Image (cartoon, rainbow, N blue to C red; front, side, top):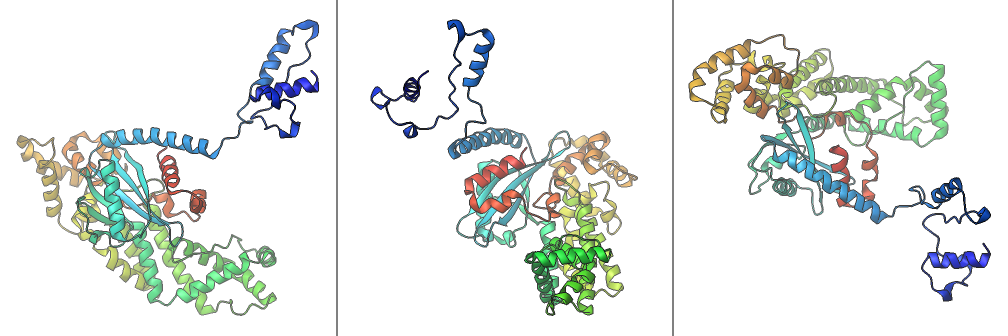
Length: 485
């Protein structure tokens, strides 16, 4: 085919008129896929194989077509709408829901509220769905967050079916909103962060922590210093790990920052001597304080790991976890760890009264693995009365069966050597059918506003790192789709 005919074919392919067919080649718009003209056929007609090869060449492939931002957004919206219908149907069929509300920020001025719902299915599986992520445009006060929480619960038709809300928002209990008569429960992980933060403030350890942050920053900002540190660690046979920068007073990142500095201190000290860095050297007393802080934070880590490794854990674990936390802190306290003593007192102030709260006591009593935590220390009259009240209000209650309630209670209280978790126990033990109805309601309430695996997450996700560049609506859809797989 001649060059003139090729130009005409390209013009015709793009819908151009006859008057444009003599335009120069560099004036043509690029095709969305590579245009390939057929081979020169022999004898006037192509053979079958040549025709198939020609057809395959002319078809555009997905790799050649670049999707625009609008196409990606439309696809995201379609996926979101489809998944939202699926989640809405699941939520509509559930009862005795619990909500969790997490306040988080991408910067000092941009705050979001992520609301999730939790319920136990008929097959005794704790199921969680993220419902919505709201951008708090004006302010991130407890009142503003509570208003968004109520709006989201109304949009999903779960306001009346919700009994409790677990939140990391300080002051949300006192927020005055019309509707949503819920019981607010503080997030266990958030409370531990608050306990640690207040302990560091009253022990005047904040200046020491800032000094440790400067040590980490020194090596992050100098490739030569980092290389020298690696060499000294190897020569001293020290375990080398990346120095982690702790922002704020998050207990987990602080633990890893202090632990890594202590483990590599002999090598760090040699680098400081070589480079004459005197202001960042740690005294023996400072290192002793760091060791005490690490010992305390290791206890927090053990306690939170016992809560679980994935998903959400019920509030039935809070009382036994607090008891274990106080017991281990007392051991450190008796061994001369002053940090443990002060943290224990602050911990007792914030969560020491959990064993006195009826909702926590009933939930723990209905968890066969942890029921002894409340049965051994005090009577069970208030727990039994609350369970009776819930049974009388349930649809399965029958008046002629009330006489056998005490025997059912006694059999359950005396059940021992239980290895299965709470949900598996209530699923398999049909003899406690009425108790199971109450257990389903109380074990639905979770202990944290976030999945437990995120409690031990050191680094933010890619979405968290890039969320400043995302529109709030896209943040909501992306979090919704990624969380509700």
